[in-house]
Image (cartoon, rainbow, N blue to C red):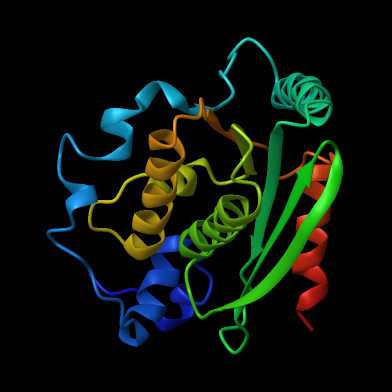
Amino acid sequence: MTLLDSVQRKVQGTIMEIDSVIPKLTEVFDLTHSDAEPGSRVRDIYLSQIRFDEQHVDKEKSASERLADWKDYLDCKLKIWSSDPNTVVAATDVSVPGNARYQAVAAAMVYQGGDLVYSTRYASGTVTAPDAELYTIWVAVSYMAGTCSDNNHFVVFTDCIAAAKQLVDPSIHSGQGHSLAVCRVQLEWFLGGRIAVSPLSKFPSKQNGIYTKLPTNMCKDFHP
């Protein structure tokens, strides 16, 4: 079934994004990479050291109450991590314009001891929102791997937990190259003997903490 052009113009979301960019994709996938073999994947070996911090949905509370609870939880966590010099915290966000003439923008900021040590933003090409999210998390982790490798606690904040989960999945999917690179980094962290715990925390798009608001603004300021 094909939607009428007038209907397609009103429909938004990842499916429509994929439909518009597939003809332009040139990504190469690795079917037999050793890091993607069952039993050899980073999550198979070090499952307890990679966590996905998601909010439990309390159906008895309203959406605004759940948002307030999650913000309080994140604020508490940030205070603890900010006071720990051995913890590195990254915040990421992306902006995908509705106009296909413009590229998506990915922004990442890295903090250590509560201080901003790195910030960057990139034009990410004509890609879907999940692919852009995957890319910006990879950018943050790559920086932490190269500059903060002596630390043993790495935290990533993202509003797309699906992309965070995909990042440590080296199987075939869009953005597999980013996932393979991050999985190799994590294997090196863990094999180096450090007790490296890597929580990937979801923050709501409406959360206004310092670690989440600034990357979002960097993205928005980039577009005309």
